[in-house]
Image (cartoon, rainbow, N blue to C red; front, side, top):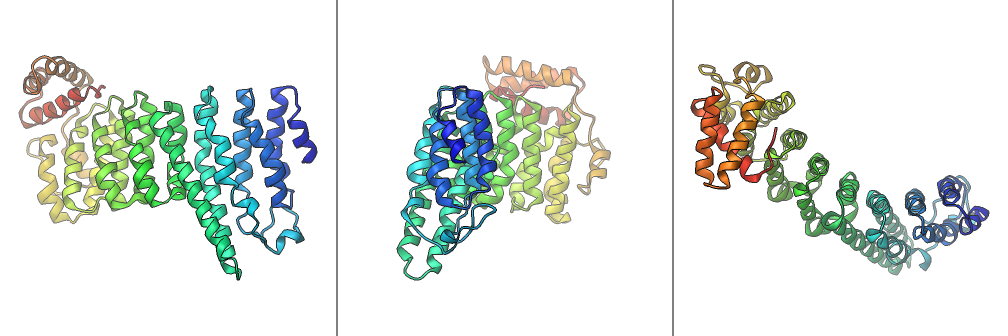
Length: 417
C-alpha cells in the first residue's frame, strides 16, 4: 500500500492514477491499522481529488467513498482481515475527531464548483455515502467512549464532530439541490433517503426537504420523475407533517405535468402513501382521489391502470361505508351512465369506467385552452375546451369535469400527451 500511494503521487498518465485509485480500496481491506489508513492513504486520495484531470478527480471521489465506508467506528474493531494488538485495546486520540468536519469535507467541498460536470455529479452521488460514513463513525466512537470510564470528554467531542459533519453535508446537499445541474440533482436524489437518515430530523426539516421542491419545476423530466420516485422513502422518514405540508402538494401538483412518466410517478407515489397508511384522514384521501380521477380516462393505458390501483388502495385504507358515501360520488363523471359504483375493487372500476379520451381530443383541448387562456382568461378557456371536447363526442358532466382539469393543465403549461 505504501508503494502504491507513493507511485500515485508521481504517476505520469491519468490512466495510471485512475487504475491505482481503483486498486486502493481492495488493498486497504488487508491493512490492520485504522491510523495507517487515515494518516497515509486518505491524504493521498484527497490530494488526487484536486488532480488536473477530471477522470482522476472522479476516481478519487469513488475511491474515498469505498474506503470511508469500511472505516470502523469502534476503536477496538479491526480494519481488515488482520488484527492489530495495538489498536484492539481501544484508544480515543485526537486524530479521528477532525477527520470528517475539518479534513474530508473541506477537501471535497470545492468539488461542488468543479469546472467538470462529471466531477460534480460524482460528488453528488457520493455525498450520502460519505455523510453516512461520517455520522456512523463518530456516533460509534462516542458510544464506545461513553462505555469507558473517564472518557466523557471524548464522547462529547465526537458528538460535536458528528454535528459538524452533519451541518457540512446538509449545506452541500442544499447547495446541490438549489444550484446544481439536473444530473447533479439526480445523483443526489437517488440516495436522498439514506442522506436524510444521516443528517437527522432538524436539518432535514430546515434545509433538505424544502430544497427538493424546486427540482420539480426543472425542465428535465427525468429529474422531476426521480424526485417523485424517491418521495415515498422520504415520506416514511419525515412523517405526517412533512407529507401534509410538502410531499402531498408536490405529488398532486405533478398530476398535470408535461411528461406521462412524471404523472405516472406522481400517482404511484400517492398509491404507495395510501398503502402505507401515511395519508391519515378521509378528507385528504378523497381530495387526492378527486385530483387523480380525470386520469382514469387518460389515453395512456399505464396512467389509467395506476390511477385505478390508487383508488383501490384508497378503498382498502377506509371503510366501505365511507368509500361509498364520500368517494364514489366523486368518480361519477368518469363512470358509464347507469353503472353506479358500489365498491373500489379493480374489477368494479374496470367494468364501470367510461372509454378513455382519444389522444387527438386531449391534445386539441389542451392546445386550444393554452391559446385562449393567454388572451381571454380562464373562464373563456374552459368554454373553448368544452367546445373542443364536444366536437369529439364528450358531453355532460364528464365534459365539464375534463374541461376544468385540462384548463388547469393548460394554465400551468405543463400538460401534454
